[in-house]
Length: 159
Image (cartoon, rainbow, N blue to C red; front, top):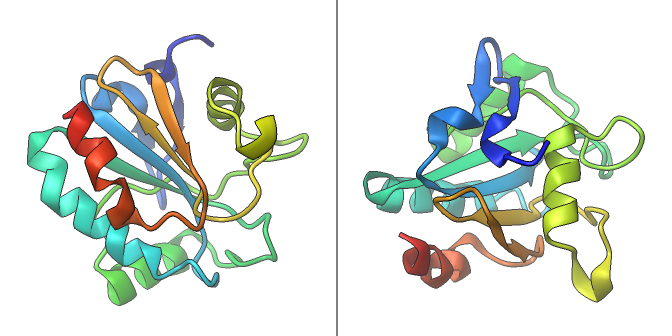
């Protein structure tokens, strides 16, 4: 697949999360987990979503249980946790895999488009972030340690 907007994933709980619905927007795509040391980043991601959504930003979370089994819950539990603890209103997919034999094709696409530190493809941990421009080009990859507020300038440059 060569067009990022062609990907469709199961949405958290029910329905579909179609990236085509976000065409023409700047995207921040993040693999997430509810029981991780970086989980408080949900608050910063939600702040970015609220601050820039009307200007054309879509934040989308992708729960993943591959790192330390830090996303063990089912869809309803994940959604309730995110909403209750961090007020998350941005879309979330159902749990996916971002590495290994069952990697979701979207994440294969993202990893091919922007490699990590030292040219690695693999996702190293929860809260790896990919920034995508309005045309669907992956322009930046941010480490899990990069706080959402530290991405503001990069987002503003694309809006």
